[in-house]
Each structure stands twice: as C-alpha cells, then as structure tokens.
Length: 59
Image 1 (cartoon, one colour):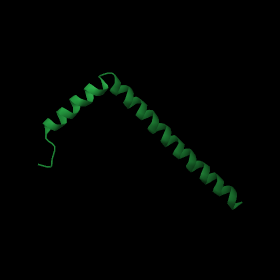
Image 2 (cartoon, helix red, strand yellow; image 1 turned 90 degrees about the vertical axis):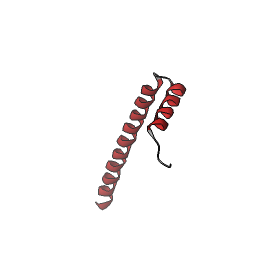
Image 3 (cartoon, one colour; image 1 turned 120 degrees about the vertical axis):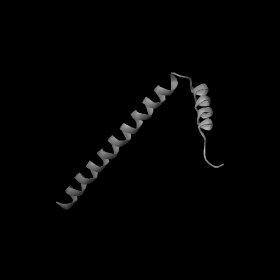
C-alpha cells in the first residue's frame, strides 16, 4: 500500500510532461547542470582560497 506502483510513476510522468512540455524539460535539466557545475567550481575555489590564506597565516 505504501509503495508506488508503475502506474503511479506513469501518471506522475504524464502530469510533468503536461505541465512543462516536451521541450522545456531538457532546458531545465541543462540549467540545473550548469548550476551544479558552478556550485562545485565555487566550492573548490573556496577551498583553494582557504588553504592559501591558512598558508599565509602560518608564515
């Protein structure tokens, strides 16, 4: 009763396609991927900045 069957997933997929349209979903996924890449890049930049500032404090 608590688990979703294949019919639940099919209905959800149909509703999503109706709401966003066939062409909108790939652009949403592309935007999400760009956001994730930007987030990861900024996180690695922060790590590099922190390690650089730590090295400067030690000297």
